[in-house]
Length: 320
Image 1 (cartoon, rainbow, N blue to C red):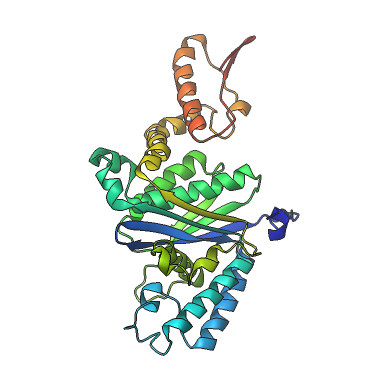
Image 2 (image 1 turned 90 degrees about the vertical axis):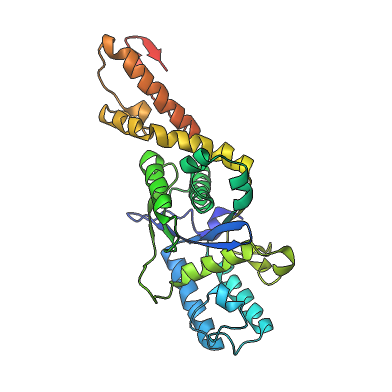
């Protein structure tokens, strides 16, 4: 679908939109899914208004999939299963009509643990962290590739045991390459007990639940990924394998290991984002040490698919 169908290509003077991403996790058997949607503030406002209207119509206060599919929940006991599936289809239609991006990243946690060492997992993280951070990188990379110069503010549902690990991973990613991955910021929803998640997180919960159900259970949710005309520009569905995790996250572990050294380069006037545009005077006896630093910087840049490279210029000779 063309970008202008989403109004993402509109340039407003002195105004730059920030996309808002809301993601949640779901688990079933061995599968872990981190899924959600990305849209502008006005798009999320439209979704909220329309979802609340639908809730009032069918007499429910919120959507929580674990309760919604249970025949024991008092919140939904007045609805038949057929009526519940109809409600989900309607809510999914509202999302398709308003939201720009949907994504779900899944990983078989049991196979991942069996196929990797304890040391590797300690460096890379849990299935939850891998899925969530992969979604951030995947969406940011796509926005950059399509020259959509809008950043994304990420909100994840609170309460996961590995939230601190994810926050640490995203902090490194943001500091090292926040611009390249279009990261405006990230955080977690309110941890206050009894607080109902805001509607964008309820939508993320719905998609995460749908993403890991057996194929014969997906009929009710398939319209979330329907090919019929909608406003969803990108629809990512990434089933991670242990091999793919190694390929993607091995380099990221290396990035984290070199992160502090990269940050030190900024003090010398060099950075991943603007290496070619930075200048600093270097004495001849400092060149070997500086060249080693440059090599490390460019190695990280290559891992992040950043075209710019830092270099040293001495008189008429360029040292890449």
